[in-house]
Amino acid sequence: MKLTKSVQICGVDDAGRGSMLGPLVIAGVSIDKKKVRKLSQLGVKDSKKLSKNKRELLYSQIISIVDCYYVAKILPKSIDTSVSKHRLNQLEAKYMAKVITKLGPDTSYIDSCDVNPKRFGLEVSRLSNNKKIRSYHHADSKFIVVSAASILAKVTRDRAIARLRKNYDLGSGYPSDKKTINFVKNYYKEQKTIPNFVRKSWSPTKKILEEIYF
Image 1 (spheres, helix red, strand yellow):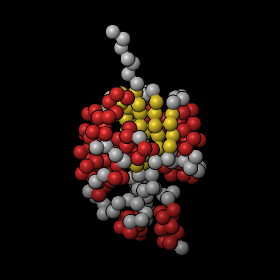
Image 2 (cartoon, one colour):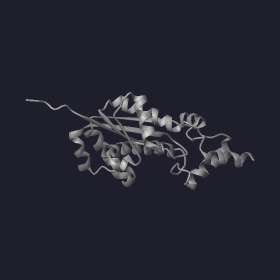
Image 3 (tube, one colour):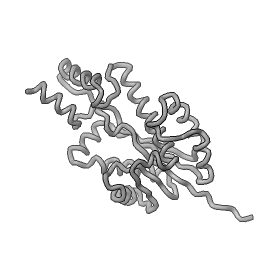
């Protein structure tokens, strides 16, 4: 009897890129191509289209179905260093390559943060030494393996923020949230420093410092 070779398909996505605080999370899943339909049967879709409770439920179901998964956190200090060098996309490419290298799939689908998805894919391919990288905008809504990765990334990110909320009233962490802005502003006024979980390179953070200084 002829055995068919298992073909591993990988999806990689991020969560928290636009946030003022907390980690930028990169997650990847690898699954046998023949099992991908099981993700559809679970109701896996882009994490942004799911409720928090649904994401939490799917998180455990996804990791029980996929053959392998890996989640990496990029801390604010590393983000700030890369932003100062105008290399945030390169930092994300580096971590996506790290995830893909850990998983060792045959083909990977990634959600591009670069305006040029082909360029981003080539960079991830170079860093991971893997030629079969498929890079797209909105890959989390086009490919279910990327949707699954987006759920793992989002849940991991949400859990990190929830841990911070145990000690700080910091809102969602995004610059569109007045509670987040006020938290950073008031913290700096009282402590004369910025918390290490806040991204100092972000424009809203810089604006707060400038307003207080001048």
